[in-house]
Image 1 (tube, rainbow, N blue to C red):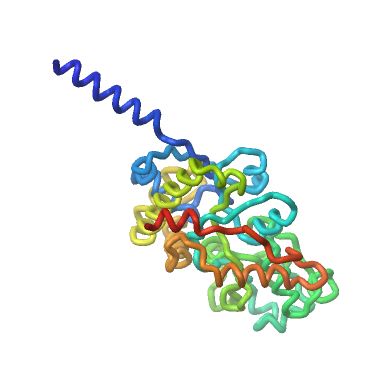
Image 2 (cartoon, one colour):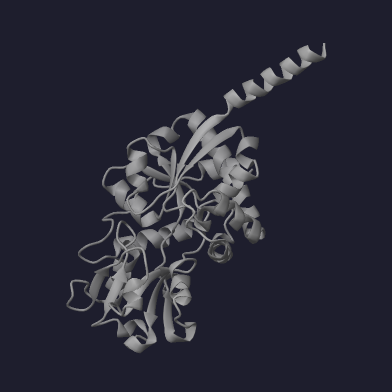
Length: 324
């Protein structure tokens, strides 16, 4: 009898495992604390509790989330809204279903010795800028300042994903994130007092970062929507846990770094900075933040990121159900 019961339990467990819905998430960048909430949700069993089997795909310099989802390689992707809205205007019908990041971590970090003390000092300088969709907030900011980026006012250096242009003094300023590259500059031996840092959030030109996006046609399927409701609920549980458990979450990230490139010191510091950006978000997109982003992207003068206000680019349908 005991053997029969054991067999029945095993069959029930196998059936439950088979019933789990698969979800593939494409990250915007490599495995790091920027995505801790998702790794935490997986490690703590939050996805499993929602009946989900989540595969997290790391990104990198050669991975564009928009291309991955367009090719059917992921169910949901993490992207910055400028990139997502630009892709939508070009025909890729992405929809923002949740916004775990409330604040922007994007900065322009400058050497004081270069003579940059305020945005008025940008003229005549070389500024390092990331491309691949990350240039849109910068271009909008320059447009607001009335500065041309063709070399006549400022020279744009297409920046790699390192801080070498600043260290080697090839640029007066470079793009940094508050949770990553800024600290690479500090770790290289440059003191904070030797830097001038302009935070996009403080300059009023911040756009939304690290939102969750899906294809619009898939969202029309009730079964897919339900899967996303469960995914967002578990993911936000992961994010809030990560905010309150920085050290543990950094260790979880390290455990998921297949490359072995990350260090616990860097990830712990990063997690502390990331927690500042997710704080204040319950996962639901703030419409005012969305409108600010759209206005920024449309104010590019003769070369705006998007030419008209998008329609249907975001929805509260998922978070309304996930948060209730």
